[in-house]
Amino acid sequence: MTPTVYGKESLAGISLGSATRLTLSDGPLQLGWKHSGMTADFIAEVMALPYSRSRKDYTQAHHDIGYLSNELIENAVKFRQPGEILIEAGIFDGAFLIRVKNTIDGVTSSRFQQLLHRLQSKDPGELLLEQIETNAISATSGSGLGLLTLLSDYDAKMAWAFEENNDQRIILTTTAAVAMPPSSNL
Image (cartoon, rainbow, N blue to C red):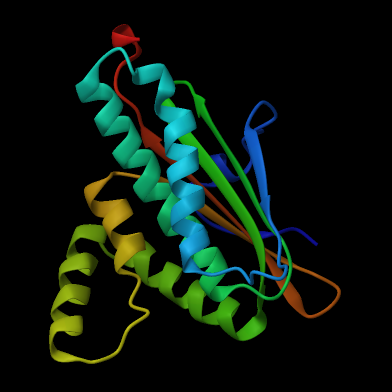
């Protein structure tokens, strides 16, 4: 079955053949949010190395890569069904690209697709402000602030592919890109 794709469709089809690959697996430690931060920090350290000649560029690259990676990995850990999370990351054509693949259940898939429909109907900056206001007057969480921040403040380009699996689970593949400092400083 052909996946349902939201966002920048061209990102969903990009080959990350030369990317760094990491797999997070369930085990005796149980995957948790702390693993998101540690994994994102590792990815940021490795991927920001080419920018280390300029402290400013390195700091910017490390921050942007770390934030983007942490948001995507954290969401994969938080909303996944039991099983592995595949992470692919690399620097391609002046941008950091990351792809995170995990399985989710049908209810999570429906809710997330509704959020993505909403994202396509409004400016991410407007939605971010609306969500901040909603959070200020409500005690609910799971608001999508991280995703909205990536789209609004980091100008991240993103794609989400939902593919039905035979066992009633959905394979969610999230691909994101954020511009890196100009390569002339490398």
